[in-house]
Image (tube, rainbow, N blue to C red; front, side):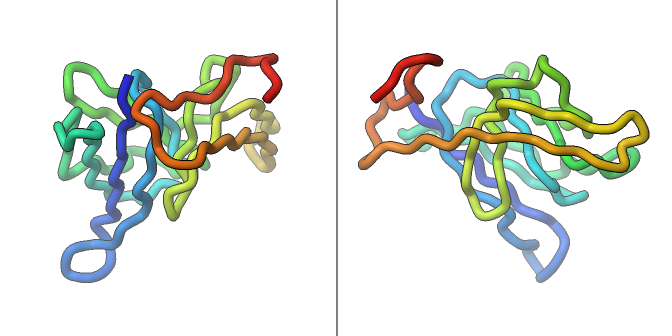
Length: 141
């Protein structure tokens, strides 16, 4: 297992757009969430050796804004959906502006979507071993 680096750029602002996040996750996730994703995105995902896992230049929001966007990777093709997360999204990485990554642990919202609350779990490791992944649920370090 290798780490993946997700580079997300907003195509709004400046001649070449603006970096939204450059985040590192363990590999193997075919879905990831983005909090407050820009409407116009370019995305590149590479492994530790610089091999491109997936790339897209024009991944724009379709429909209304929602606080979370899910990216799905299928055979190097990235798709995007705006979502109100449910339990099926728990355990997915959430990419935050600036590059932090947390794992979604809880999400609750009102039926009319006028409020929401959510919990992320953050873990880290000194250095950056190739096979780093958070410990399994319930393990204590």
